[in-house]
Image 1 (cartoon, rainbow, N blue to C red):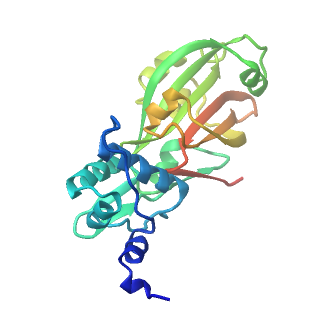
Image 2: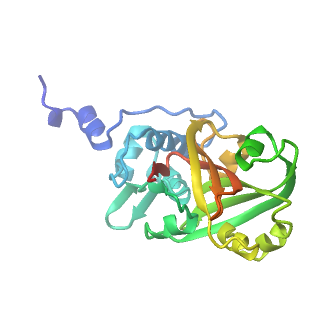
Length: 260
């Protein structure tokens, strides 16, 4: 058998952990966009583990049969999306996955900060909605009862890692929209302003599915790659349900663990 070191193709596959790929020229999609999509798909599938060094620009240029500037544009976009990190002088690495731990006292900012990341939140909208079956059951109210729904985008180091729709009983929290508007994106601070200074996670259910168009856009996530979904019920110190939340997380950037 011919040793791998004497086989250029084998050396390339070993260095890049992937075989050469021919991308479509003249197909109406920029070459760097195609390369970005292929690498993003491989990162999402686990072909590169968190912290693993990716092939060099030279190796990727050979793999895709393009110049290094085209590869560099694709890598810059992957870095902007938070899928890789570029360390000048050291190389390019698959980004570490956030370990999102669900506990009896689940707080987004605390979870992100514990991993030496900067947590930020942005309230996208506050709306009045009738309770559907799931929300009514979780909150112990009749279907159709009016709820506040707060849509929030959570980020780590400026990159989106969660999109959550929080549902609250309108009757209990009549002043919630005003509290949310001055909370700087913090649901915990908004609830405290409404008189609930402490609350706990009663239940969480985890599933996976493909994202909606809005979710994919907000999370900067490929529409044909799975997202993780949590359905959670939070209660006050007396055990009364105060929130039903549906959270969506990009599976390529977040793993969910449970500690109860």
